[in-house]
Length: 386
Image (cartoon, rainbow, N blue to C red):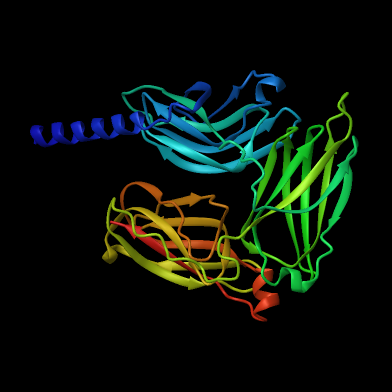
């Protein structure tokens, strides 16, 4: 028994060491806090000026637990302009492990990080939580194959402008875009919101709330392939300084497979055996709630992931209920393209799943509506790693 216990302890130490070794040297330490045994609320103050952030933005935060396990309940990011973002977490970070928080884009000018959490009450004492920022990928220069869709001069006050594409349906017939790129010239631009309006009247809204520095570009992933654009509506403002009004240019990045079928699904991971636990078809309109029953007879799993077929899906919430009755709420809030899988969602250890509850909705693709005169319904499958 002693030998078995020592072996398990050694394996755990090796696992923790591996996690620590995989910490990316490019990550930036934003702050740290000691975590009490009761539910605690702490603030990590970044204490950096606006100039420090001018060349820095982050695509994710990584919470690293040291000295003890930490159960993170919620996180709030507060920016220099007073804007705040809330993230519901409800996840355990084992000692030596790290939990990534996808910021769904690029975030900068963070004033403070508020955390609600607790240490595991045991002999190891209070935990230490460290928060690292994962830098966003460097912005790409304007691509030679990008299409200039239009430009506008940006006023100093909050302004609302439109870029009219002024192209016929025939022009779009062999063109679709996987992303739009907003390029700021002459001055910085603070982009508040964007709306895309299509030839058939369908509209898509994007809440942005971020700064585009002079000479940089901000990509907007369209979550698939978009075409037949009538106009791009923008709410924004220039930075009021001596440089004067900014000019914003909008480029369309061509889709890799314009008009073609989705590519092959990525192969299953080599870190375990993945099995399909169940599938559900998503309602065409409005939100849908479904339950996929699993049960003890299907075995124990260390992670799950979602697979989407036939149409794009926006996942709003995911809840795992284990056989012992304990739930695990994962505020996933993620857009998944047809033919793609999510990254594995780690369950912490091997667990028997009773059921998986999903809240989601199909995302209509205007290309399907206009060119194919039909609307695809999405199917979402859940896979478990044994």
